[in-house]
Image 1: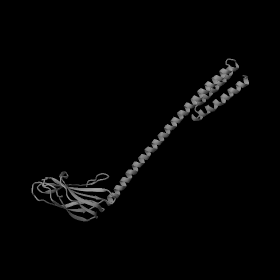
Image 2: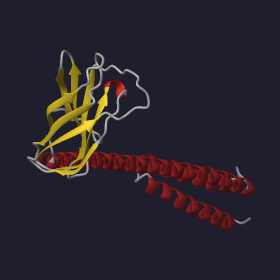
Image 3: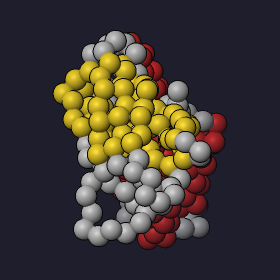
Image 4: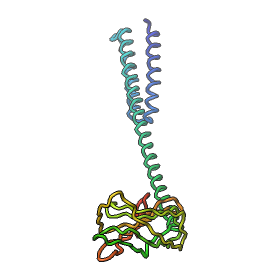
Length: 255
C-alpha cells in the first residue's frame, strides 16, 4: 500500500475518532479530562503514522491497531452514554418523587382545609339534642326489673334542625328491647315528648338490669349522623347518669 493510501486510512480513522470524541466532549460539557483524552487519541494516531513511515509497523499492523483503538473508543463512548442516561434517569426519578411528595402534601393540606371548613359549616348548622324530664314506669314485680314504659322529653337546643330522628331505649347489655319512635325533623328550639314501651317477649323470664340507655339518632343538614345517649342508672330510684353525643361517621365529639 502506498504512503498516500495509508495517509487516507489514518485520516479517515482520525476523522471518525474526532467525531466520537466530540460527542463525549458535548456530554461531558467540555471537561479537561475529555480534552486530555482527545490529545491522547491524536498522539496515538500520529505515533502510528510515524512508526509506519520509519518501517517499524507494517500497513496491516497499523490497520489492526486503528481497529483496536476504535473499538476501545466506541466502548468508552457507550460507557459514557450509559452513565449519562443512568444519571438523567436518576434525576428524573428524583424530580418525579419530589413532585409526588409535593402533590401528596398539597392533597393533605387541601384535605385538612376541607375538613376544617366542613367542621366550621357543621358547627353553624349542627343540632344539639338533649334528653330531659324522663319518667320510668315500673311494675315492681321483682328487684331491678326493667321499666315497662319510659317517657322522655327531647329538646333541640342547637343551631340546625335534627333530621330523621329515631328515639329508642336499650336495656343493660341489650338484654331488653323497647319500641322505637321516628320523627322526620325536630327544628331548632322545638321540644317533643315521647313514650316508648318494652317489647313483649315470648317467655316470662325475669331480667334484671342496673341501667338503661336512652338513645336518639339523627342527621344534621350536612348528612352526618349523630347519636345522643343518656344513661339512667337504677339505685333507690332511676337517676340520670352520663350524657354523651357522638358523630357516628367522621369522629367523636362529646358534649
